[in-house]
Image (cartoon, rainbow, N blue to C red):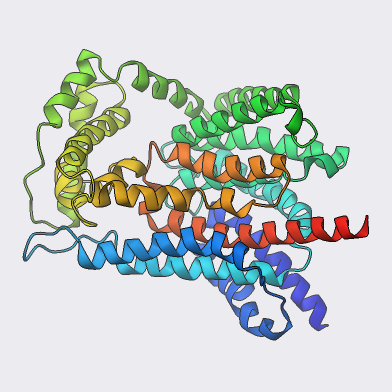
Length: 449
C-alpha cells in the first residue's frame, strides 16, 4: 500500500509539471501535496546524488544567481531617499524561487526511474492539457482571443507546453515508432498552442529557432541517430501552422496573424514612424512620480494610446520605446547598473509597466554587466547539467530550455516575474534529477556490457 501511494505521488508530481501550464499559480495546493509533503515523508528512503561535481553544476548557477538578486535588492536598490519601493521585485520573489529549486532538486531525486516515468507520463499529460486549452479556445473563454486558461498571461501555456514537448525528444534513438509519432504530434500541437491559441509571438520566434537548430544539428553525423530527421521536423512545423487556419476559421480569432507583425518590428525598427519615436522617447530618464497602482494603469493606458497613434502595432512600438529608454540608461551605468528597483523611475513611471519587456536589458539596467553574467549563467544551467550525456541529449536539453526561454526573453522579462522565475527554478531542480538518473542509467548499462 505504501509503495503504491508513493508511486501515485511520484507520478502526480510529473503531471503537476505539465498541468501548471494552464493552472499556473493555482497549482500550488496540488504541488504542496505531491511535491513538498513527500520530501519529508520519503526523506529517509531516498537516495540523493552524492556527486560533488554534479551538485556544483546545479548549485553554482542557481544559488549564485538568486544570491546576487538578494544582495542587489538589499544593498543596491537604486531608490531615492524616502522613495516608496515598487511591488516587484521583492525578497519574496527570490525566496520562493529558491524554495522551488529545492523542491525540484529533492523531489525529483526521490522518483525512481525518473527518466522512464517522465517519458511515460508527460506525453499523455500534454495531450490532456491540450484538450483543456482547446476547450477554453472553442468555448470562447479567452482574453482578447488569446487563451490563458487559469494563468495570468497567455505566454505561460505557450512556453511550458513547448518546453516540455521539446524535452520529450530526449533519448530519441531508443523510442519506439509509436512513441516517436506521439512526440512529433506534440510538437505540432505546440505550434497550435503558440500561434493559434495564445498568439505568443516571442515564444513563437524561439520555437521556430529551436526547430531550425535541431534541423541544422541533424545534418551532422554526430546527431543523426539522436534527433528526428529534418523532414519530420519540417512536417511537424508545417502541420502545426496548417492547423491554425481551421482554428481561426471556427473561432474568428487571428492569433496566427500576430506573428508577421513581429517581423515588421525588426524590419521597421528604424523607420521614420517608429524610429523617430524611439529617439524622442529615449532622450532621457523619466521624471519620478508618486502614485498608486491606478496611476500605473493610467500611465500604461496613455502609453498604449500614444503607441497606437504612431503605429498599427502598439505592443511592438511600446517595446521599442522601452528598449530605447533602457539602452540610454545602460550607457549611463554599464558595469553595475542603476539598482534592483531602478526600473520604477526608468520604465514604470513613464510607461506604467513593471519591466521593460527584455530580460537582458532588465539585467543590464538594474545590475549592469555583472548581473548579465549571473543571469546568463543561470539561463545556461541545463547545458551544465547535461554533462556526461550523449551529444544529442545535451543539445535537446540546452535548446529546449536555454534556447527557447533565452530567445523568448528578448521580448519579455520572464525571470523578473513571479510565476516564470518560480517555474524555471523548479524545472532546473527537476532537470538535475532527470539528468542524474540518465547518467546513472548510462553508467549501469556500460558496466553490464
